[in-house]
Amino acid sequence: MPLGIRIFLVYFLFVGLAGYFVLSTVMDEIRPGVRQSTEETLVDTANLLAEILRDDLKAGSLAQSRLPEVLRAYGRREPGARIWGVEKTEVNHRIYVTDAQGIVLLDSTGAAIGQDYSRWNDVLRTLRGEYGARSTREDPADPDSSVMYVAAPIKDGERIIGVVSVAKPNRSLQPYIERSQQRLGWLGAGLIGLGLLVGGLLSWWLSGSLRRLTRYAQAVSEGQRAELPALRGGELAQLAQAVERMRTELEGKAYVERYVHTLTHELKSPLAAIRGAAELLQGEMPAAQRERFVANIDQESARLQQLIERLLHLSLVEQRQGLEEQVEVPLRALVEELLQAQLARIERADLQVENHLAADLKVRGERFLLRQALANLLDNALDFTPPGGLIRFNAEQRGEQVELRLFNQGEAIPAYALPRLSERFYSLPRPTSGRKSTGLGLNFVEEVAELHGGELCVANVDGGVEARLSLARGDA
Image (cartoon, rainbow, N blue to C red; front, side, top):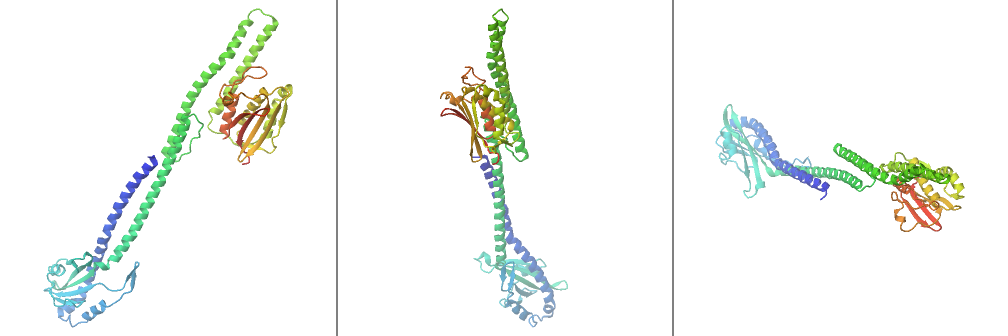
């Protein structure tokens, strides 16, 4: 299972469980919280009524007062109030008054007058001087039919002369409880969803960063050219930099070891030839033979110099992970510059050169590397073109790419050699001298092409050989 999914699942489990427990706890607290607030209001109401009823109860004129009529009128009222989205169409308080023995003297419903309520907790505890309250079901089988009763003592000085109780059915509170629970449920679900979305995005970002870093490490381990991914975040950025430093150090060490071995191997042949010629020159020999050995020393010295220079150029691009600059390079002008540098060689071999590149054709890249790559291709073409032969430059635009084509007249490349042309130190004998080159030129061109996001292809065509180099278009 991918790391990002595992992180998200752990986050999902944690946020989901935490959200569920917090939400369920808050949900469970809504009902008692609303009832506690209601009970506190009933306490205030009962105590207010106790003060209002005190004088009439003390005088024994409660039944003859306007209070029974007032309570009956209160019970018939229709408030028509809209409270937090809930429509209130009737009053829900029941009020009854008892004497000091718990006998009901006044009842807003008129149903309990004359009954003995002295055993109900609200009346019983209040007559004892305690806080009197109870919750009783109207229907014993229905838990939602419970009614809260809160009583307050009616006092004559310090003597309790009666009790007033205010009752409110819990079902009248249910719409507010359900509305609060519903809103809290939606809000909680939204917060949990938002938390999971944030967790998903975090997991996606983290796993994506790790995937990019993994792909980079795999590409490096396979010897491919790869660019260090730009990662944000302290630890990830530090990890990427650490991997890059490790890659640089390991590649540098391996690169030096490989090139020391390669250079040692390749230098043996020309050094042996120079040393042999030098030993022979120490003895007596005809002048013509001496000149031939001196010429051999000169040729092998030039070969050594060419080998070292090309190795240096190749090491320059092989160690590069990207271009140092990207500028627009006029292709025709660059080719004309190279042809001018090789003019003496072209004229000596009586070669025909055709430059069909458009004057406004441009490619994007690093000019120095592009010049070196084209110079290597031109060197190869000059080496394998017979005297009086043809060399032709042309180009074709393919979307965002420009394909430069260099044709040289000459013999076809053997089929066995085609797949190995860009292999390091692999070379075919030159037609004129029979000698091989360093075998580094096409390898250098291929490395430059990859740095520029293109590729090199060498193939046989009618009448000769064609090298195709694709590069990014300059005005793209």
